[in-house]
Image (cartoon, rainbow, N blue to C red; front, side, top):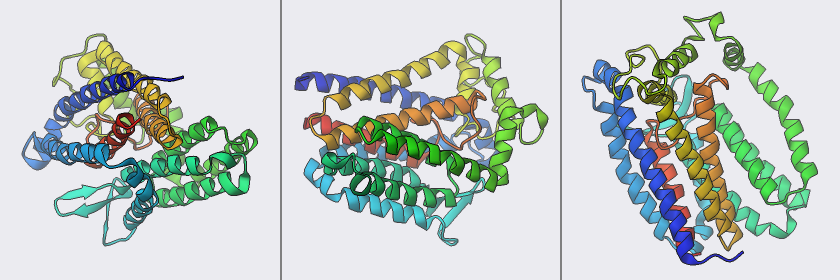
Length: 367
């Protein structure tokens, strides 16, 4: 089906308006959820919102850089960008370079700022997958020439992420990659075999680390240890329940007073649900559904396989991460350590996602 350029740009405008709305909501609730904790720990209730605003500057600059770079140059340097992001993520495992927080070594320290390279690894991994699928388009049914190299790339990525450990990112990347491989019409026997083989691998990963097994047990029955391992999810459910239909009002959350841990990062949604209630929560969910809808519409209008698979990869990745975060907050999945895209506090995530949007804009403008 042929689409005119104006229709593509119209969909892109809608997508960027949705992103702007989600980002603005994020700034409001990063301040609301973190103000008490920030004042207690750093002496300023504006500590986290100021840092997030500082990250917005490189995020916007990155958006325009990736929106303007020639598509041929982007494609040419894609393997190098992926390789560099892989090296940076590996450096987090070096003791004198990596910063360990909450039991994970996911950050590199840069003066007063910290960088989470795995966020950029996701960015350049799916850019590389788009590049690779276009390159191997005529061999997608081949195990040796197409599917196996993909599995090796993913395997190396997963090994590094699991060493941090970042099991949540592995699940998100794996799910998104399967969607891309299905759309790319890879051999269904290969895909089905991968899913079957991944089941015992996931079971082994869960049982190999006691904290992962504990998360599963707490997910099944958080009330077994309400003051210990089950405390976070119980407080999350209390926050969501307290919001009722209309919420208690923005900045009026009681759970942010040191009841709900990680209230401005992984568990920001329960604070939102408490303050704006069921209605406000539906608005958040609707915005993510609209993001998926317009993102897919834009992807379907791309003329090159590189642009199509990269765009659909970015859109699906962001959507899956949002779905996982929302389900974890509602007690429908074990905790994963994934933030809510555009909304949760986190500079590296914000910059990486704006890079993805810049690339999508680039493809749309040159379609």
